[in-house]
Amino acid sequence: MSTKDGKSSERGVSEVVGGAEEQRLRRSYLRKADLHLLPPAFAMYFFAIIDRNNIGNAKVAGMDVELGLHGEQFNWIVSAFFFTYIFFEIPSNIILKRVGARIWLPFIAICWSILVALMAAAKSYGSLVAVRVLLGVFEAGYVPGFIYLTSFWYTKRQQAPRIALFFSAGVFAGIWAGPLAARLQEINGSLMGYQYIFIIEASITVALAVIMAIMLQNYPETATFLTEDERAAALRMLANDKALSYNTDYRPRQVFRALSDWTIWGYAIIFWAAATGGATQAIFGPTLIKAMGYTSTRAQVLSAAPSACGFASQILSMFLPRLYPRFSVWIMIFSAAACAFYAVIATVENIHVRFAFLCLSNFALSPNMPLVSIWMSNNVMGVTKKGVASAVTVMLGGVAGLIGSHIYRGKDFPQYRFGHIFVCVCNAVIFVVAFALNLYFRYENRRRDSQNEDFDPSAFSKNEVEDMCDKRPDHRYTW
Image 1 (cartoon, one colour):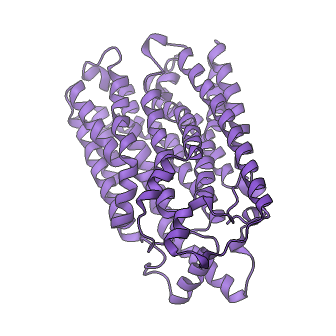
Image 2 (image 1 turned 180 degrees about the vertical axis):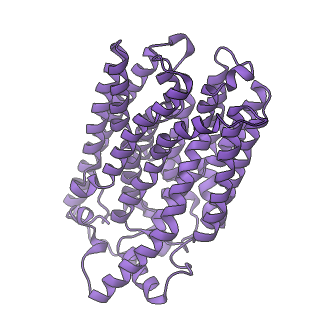
Image 3 (image 1 turned 60 degrees about the horizontal axis):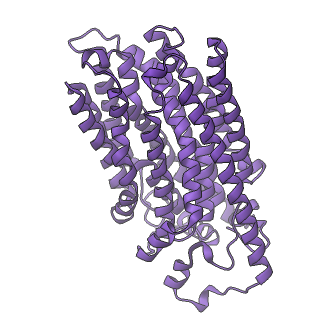
């Protein structure tokens, strides 16, 4: 929560020490909520990233040769996913609010895993494009859906490490995707090695979706694993923090307010630019390493190293906002480092130096997606506006995948200088936008402080207060 002195957002007003029994109930609530939400969400995102990006592993395993792909066809197969991924994130969050996460998230996971398995049966360029287009429809809702869901369960301060942990699953997947694909492609059977990659990884996702449907609950107000005392303590904590409530109606006017708020697009641009580097590393990492002179299997295995560096930095990002709660500052530090590292990769010839800086660049790239997601979630208020904002933010991540699919071009082999320069520029954009948001939020907080308005929510109707969103006079932005 943010208040007029601008400091309570740093300490977390909702977590000020109360009675011993109240604190015990809150701790019990958080343990149970974490147990039911985080393990299935982490595991599912782990395999969502593998299912999305195993097309790159399949290429290294010989899919392109088997299907006769040539020119830029593989790049278009990769980017086909993002044409639908971009447009189905906002509708998916609206559906999630209506039917509940316990039904919607496992449902879309089963749908996308079936489509991944169908890629093993594809016999042509056109069939792969068609399946990837449908895959984007169902994967679109998972990341914004989880971010939105946490707004109902946790205070803003509690969200930060949990969203960072969630995003770390994507980078963690990169550590295992290559070695796992290397083992699967070596299966001796009636199918090609790349087909086993698709079928077995998709089967695991189906099993996880069933587990998620069993463990996940929609809202703390209706969760069956809580005692009444734990529920009451949790709702008091969440109410103090102005967390989202499940019984708040969908407000269409907040959709327009979200789409017309330039700061939402600022978050989205940062997410887009950060995702450009992350997506290209995930998909083209084995290809870039193979171009350095390694064999197919060796490149699959070595692709784990940059991902391990990214995973370490995303785990680090869980604690950075607690150390220094200025999201814009951390984002600018990491983007400046990534920009410098990619400049080195683009200019040096030595393959060992390039590989080392590929690892360092992934370390610098990886924290910015969770950091900007948490920053957005902390600052945006209103149930519908926050749902749209989280979808818009991740939606531009889809644009990153669409563009990023074409920046590492076959004609640039083996240096791939164009792609590295492109990602370098993206990180410069992150720095500029984060700096602009920093200046605006500090100005806006000072302006509201100077007006010194007394705000009494009881003087307004529930819908009037809800529709004020983050323009409430007592709201202060985190910068």
